[in-house]
Image 1 (tube, rainbow, N blue to C red):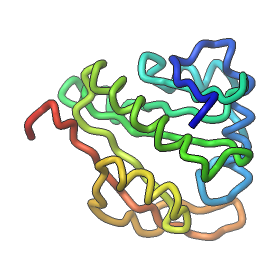
Image 2 (tube, rainbow, N blue to C red):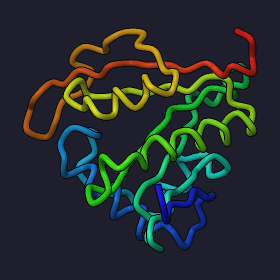
Image 3 (cartoon, one colour):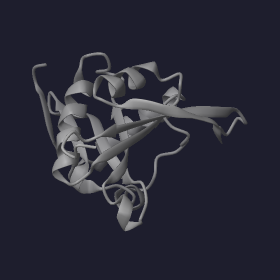
Amino acid sequence: MENISIRKFTEEDFEQLINVYQEGIETNIATFETQVPSKEHWISSHDLSCTVVAIHCGKLVGFATLSPFSKRHVYRGVGEISIYISKKVRGLGIGSILMSDFIEVTEDNGYWTLLAKIFPENEPSLRLHIRHGFRIVGTLSKIGQTEQGEWKDNIFLERRSKLTGI
């Protein structure tokens, strides 16, 4: 795809990033969240060394980031992925470019397992993850409840780094 670049997140990207995240919230199939977090909360809850953004025609149109799976040392190489693409560019292949670069960045930073929890209705995200080596390990049934009282499942996926040999 022309005019697309992937680079590391900087704090100056936050406003554009959070706009893309808001679009994800509005789909009702990307997250249980109903409001965007503060900059301080978002930055403190993600591994910024593994956060990358997609830039298309000079605008941030997507991002991929990790949240630590656990604070325990034994899980230091395990992270939960979040990937969001602006509705303006969905279906153009930007998610695949972003995911490829993101996986490389996470492996360079010592992550051996990536986890994802995806609503069953979010078929494009499921396809993207599977295309990039994630496998479904199960369903978390009625794992969370929306503000409207609807119980929702998550498909639980994992991807092991080929670098580990496990």
